[in-house]
Amino acid sequence: MPEVLKAPLVLEFPFTRSLGPVQSAFLTGLRERVVLGVRTRDGRTLVPPVEYDPVTAEDIRDLVEVAPTGTVTTWAWNHQPRRGQPLDTPFAWVLVKLDGADTALLHALDIPGPDAVRTGMRVRVRWAEQRVGAITDIACFEPYEGDPLETAGHDGRFVDMVTGIVAPARLDYVYSPGRAQSGYINALSGRRTVGERCPSCRKVYVPPRGACPTCGVATSEQVEVGPRGTVTTYCIVNIKAKNLDIEVPYVYAHIALDGADLALHGRIGGIPYDQVRMGLRVEPVWTDGGRYPDHYRPTGEPDADYETYKELL
Image 1 (cartoon, helix red, strand yellow):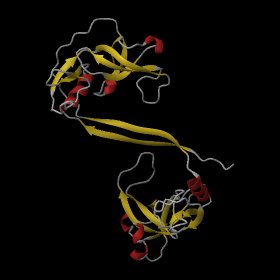
Image 2 (spheres, rainbow, N blue to C red; image 1 turned 90 degrees about the vertical axis):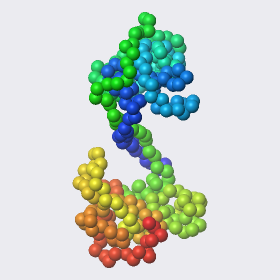
Image 3 (tube, one colour; image 1 turned 180 degrees about the vertical axis):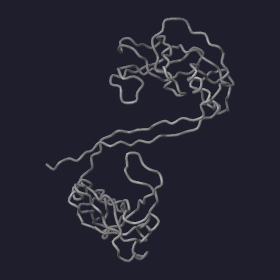
Image 4 (tube, helix red, strand yellow; image 1 turned 135 degrees about the horizontal axis):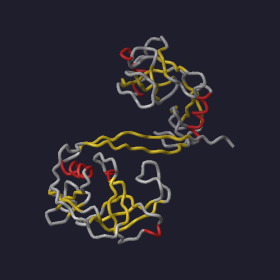
């Protein structure tokens, strides 16, 4: 049996957003240990607050303080917390209707086990020691047996309001290529580039996908292409990527390898970024032990005529 290829991959980016007046007040309130909701025209109090009534779509801005105590309306047990979750020991995800609110807030409940949590139990907010104006300023909920705590009736006006947040988004997964891409990857380790030819339209696709994207039929005939190719289009990168040791600016391009009917992408090196152009003839540069080309450099050949690659833009 051939080796099944697989690799752990991480897709991660920081999502930056500005806040409107309602969310700004809500998150600033958490920083100051105040929980705010918003009151609709018919008297409902929504927590977390929203800027538009979910029933009538009316603009709502009437901020009201609710208690940091409440009642569990439903829950689910998390027996194996993941990276970035509120607690690093098993806990319950709970929906809590805070005293004074008409909707429930989702957060973690610190509880010894699933037998200790129940719908209808009373809980209160456990505040984080360091608060910055984020939902994580609520470290979690904890069991509470007392009466609803009193509120000061805060109106949502604070000094030094939080106006924006950065929410990191991350996806960890294991990727396993299929037959076609496994053949492509294995060929690269031998410094060869192979595609697959469609038995119907006869086009050669690199990287191969196992099926022709035009005809929809399976492909299996391997065809070696390149190693040289033509820059069909490109972009200049001016923002340095995290964990990528390449100085900016640099050029990333679509490259149509000789014999291929689909352009792949790669970095262009060995030439000033402002001299890269459509039609530039390039060849791969391999590093010792590299399983794929590190970058492509000019071959010194005359530029390709536009008519030879216009269908591959």
